[in-house]
Amino acid sequence: MTWYSQATKTFANWIAISLFSIVLLLQALNIFLRYTTLASPLMWVEEFSRFAFIWILFLLWHVADREGAHFQVDFLHERLSNRGRKRLDVLTHSLALMFSIVVLLASVRFIPTTMLYATNSFAWLPMGVIYLVIPAGFILVAIERLRLISSILRS
Image (tube, rainbow, N blue to C red):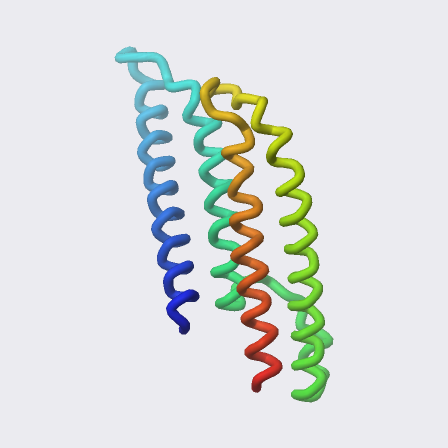
């Protein structure tokens, strides 16, 4: 594994574990507050949890790409020769790369328009900040797909 792959995996895992731990603690606190009379439940926890899971998904997508953890229909893949499999793999990675670039470009155009709108529970936080994970995640996915294509072509 290259230094880049290890660094992005470590960073994405660290962020995901941190966010998931915070969500777990906040949800447990909210459940406790819901069934006691100590205080009212925290209304912003649900929205924070939703945003945290969005960030986790986009940041870990490229790790799943690298490790081949996405589901795939391999009906055709099994029936091809080794050379045919490589061609099919290059094709599927290329299509995923094109999709990543399209979403990346669309998100870069979309995010500035959302900087004027606040989230429901966090009036100080523009929605654009939440959406910044989309281009960040798709940059990582595009780089990972390029790496996968180059490793297939080299083998």
